[in-house]
Image (tube, one colour):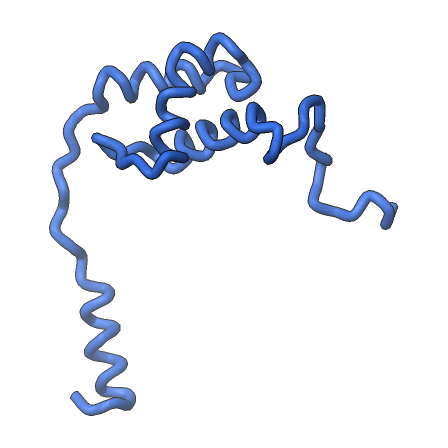
Length: 107
């Protein structure tokens, strides 16, 4: 349809049409291991967890590599966070994040 309400309605109908359902395979053993490593409280700060697998995933991500299998965004964020904590240019050693995004001078 030409631009206008009819065009919008047609586009909206397409957007709202469910896409093909992808059958997801069960999580791989490497993903399960990464989930286990990152499920421990303080895992992003833990050097042993870093060496046990988080580092390898982080290096792949920051070097532009593609994941062989998809990972939930929550895991990717934890991996990136762990990497930032170990990168002195991104996160100075011993630095602590503020409790909020509020300007501390405003208090």
